Length: 92
Image (cartoon, rainbow, N blue to C red):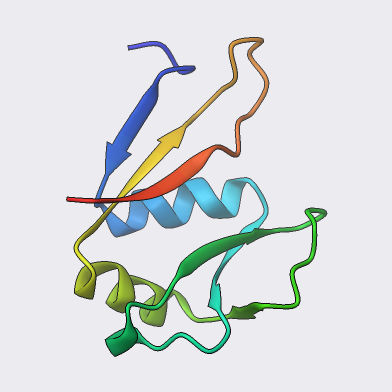
């Protein structure tokens, strides 16, 4: 599989490593709660700041991730070989 291909994982340490290498941190949309299908996001340093995002701990992030039966879809590299920040949360 090429690095430009999309991959999926539910492995917490792999997700955290991918996010942190790219300068990201776990977040959720403000006003959403875990029992309310919290909307998970990743906030990247230097990226567009969204007022609606609230930083959360990795523990809280993965609790919501598991409660909602999510899988992390991601890409390592773009076709030109540069680092990709493409990701999406999908249902298992």
